[in-house]
Figure 1 (cartoon, rainbow over the protein chains, first blue to last red):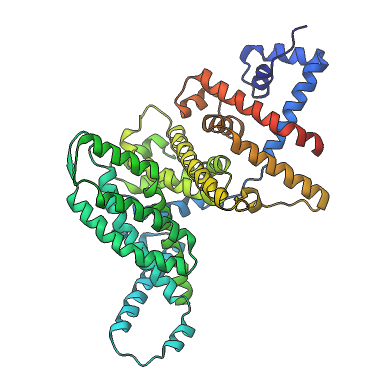
Figure 2 (tube, chains in turn yellow, brown):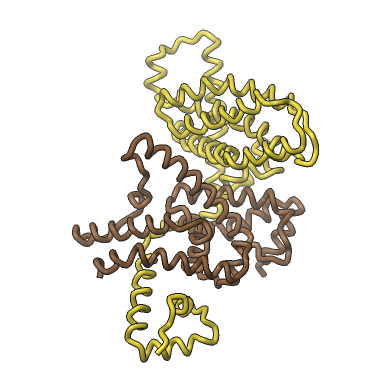
Length: 253
Length: 192
């Protein structure tokens, strides 16, 4: 008797054996060896199914949309109409706006005399420093993203002068050190890690040649893609936005 | 009557962001399932869902109207998951080299509802072995297996996501199942 091969058993399990399924079924009925092999296969695949899958709420799609909408062209944050958002996100937008006001208030306080003692400030708002770092990092990430997106979207069939991008990259590098050191100091390893990667990429751009041949443009685009730096920036930026919104809401309440 | 994906894609292409919102809301949960199966990590899966929709939006002009938007989106999410898994693996290897006990355990974050300590230990071991076996699959094997086994796609559909011939997709599934059998048969025997 010719036994079923492992591949035939797998195809039978997935119902992909086409016209041979009935033949395989008949063979399994009459062949204990193949039945045992098929049983072993079923047990392994059933165990694979036992890996738990985290559930997502019914409004998960709306949550995803709220996270990506700031990065959808034509739907930039500045052009948002908060009243057009679903109710839960209206609160988040209001919270983010409040965080902006708090930041302005903080910096205003740095430059104008005020009677509140620093200790009282710290007691009243222990997370203010963290929020300000987040706001500043968010802004920094957006500006870095703009430089990198311009380079990533450059036409690889034409030479390019990137002097302006290099100047902006150099400015961003000098700016990033403060944020990175603060993030390291506060133990925020995720922020510190992404800033470290970003710093390296920006430094490479700033120190590289200003006039790129088509091949150089293509190489640069590929390096940016391989680094996945834009992905990391977007994720971190989105996390920053999320961290700011509830913090601001809590502050408001 | 509810519009098809194709109709919403056409509207989104003409600049209607609300149409794209419908597509995001329609496909987010299935994309999360795929991303979680691919990455084995909840946070990574969230990141993949987000990035996949952004990539898809940027590439909307390249989408072939005759194809299925869902399949196209799956392809983007699968690639995005693989990018992330590879990046995490590289980072993890660097961390392991520096500190042998710092490996991330994706299973630790997953819920476990088994009350018996012995069964719990066994169940945990089984899940760890399953997760490790999945991680050991190559990119093509992992993608083909997840799409065929968990998402219930036929080989033809898997090949469209992988952009390969059906025969190659079929062999990726075979190799994945064979590897999983070799890795899991001992532990499955113990769990029976």
